[in-house]
Image (cartoon, rainbow, N blue to C red):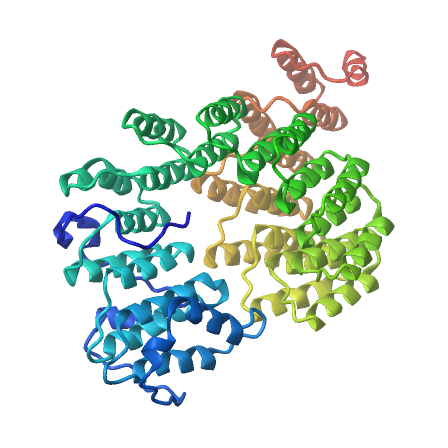
Length: 607
């Protein structure tokens, strides 16, 4: 949400100390990636900055040059989004610093920072330049400087840094205003400290003589929805209205999105109607929440109705609206309808983006339409859309499934040649695809490459490797990989344990199974029906009938009785081992609990 950084009409002069905000003590300065230097300076304000290599020239008239409009024109003229020069940013800033007699006022620096903030690709420069500013003589940041900095932190998801700036702001005795309070709330919500944010609105602001406005309430509603506390979010909306504040389109859209994420679509529609009745016009974001919620439910027809309703109300659907519906259609297997919507999208003047094509390519691949998926890849490129890592991952996976290893590797090489780095999903696909196509050594080579490039294997990667090693009889190495997974901070899931236990059973390592089963339970993971099936089959295979009976008793007592095939298999193994009395007793036991083995097995038992 973007707000003006101008001061409010209220003439409050309250300047609260840090004691009003206990969450600022000690100052929560971060260790974030972009603003390392600003964090260092905030902690040690008397330390000088290292000298810059960039030269600058003095300009006595630079102050008049940096008017706000001219400022933005200059920045946009010098800095193209695809060709940004850090030297140019420094040069322009150094001109401001070099101005003497009189020095550039803080207003000019604020204009400069605000222009950088409005250019998304240049925002990260603001933090470094602020360090230069606070070291300069005769220039002091004011409340608007800090407002820009905190607003920038909120946009860049730097919650800890935002509160660090707030701490400095209060320490310097600057006056608070509603914009600053909005920044505080954003910082707390970014750090998931919703309780403290709520306390600011309900307690701190009124005590300091400020009444929360629609913006503060909307930020708080967003935080509560993000945390899934929808009832509280609705309560704050009603409180707003009771206080005479008019919820705006962002307020309603935020709550509607939260309800849709909780699959409470019907109530979201009620709020849509309330929103319209209060004179608020739903926008593309509002409609997209409803369309996405319905698509996730599989109610594509209703989602399409909302798209048409949106158009009938004079709203032009954007690329995100169309992408959401195309994704929903593809997931439901309605590829022809998805292609039709693509044509409608183009006809309505919306240019498909990389997400549109990725969604369609993935949908076609999952439907087995490999050639058509490759056709849309060519269309995508011809329209000037550059394939990204997601595109390549889908194509490589598709070709591995088709058994076309050479083509898959060609796409990998093409991807790297375009400057795209394989991610953890890329490596998982490569490792899985290679070993399933009999290229075990090559798969392990990619694992080593993955680790050497600093990519941490995820549970999917580890599962492929554990399965690969077990099927190649390398059970000891598979066990090492599971331990390695834990040491690297990846928590194994039930699937990982099931894969290893299955490998141990099939490789005759029954004595190791109990250890891993105990380890699995100690980590809070509950064995599922798959676990028990693997154990029973493994024990029967290794002539451990008594142990298998114990596990079977456990599977029944824990309610894992859905898979009749498990019991059929076990009875069959008992018969083959000549344990007919046990098999008959087990059959009666199962029938009493509503589990009826197959007819043929019943006949065998009766005979």
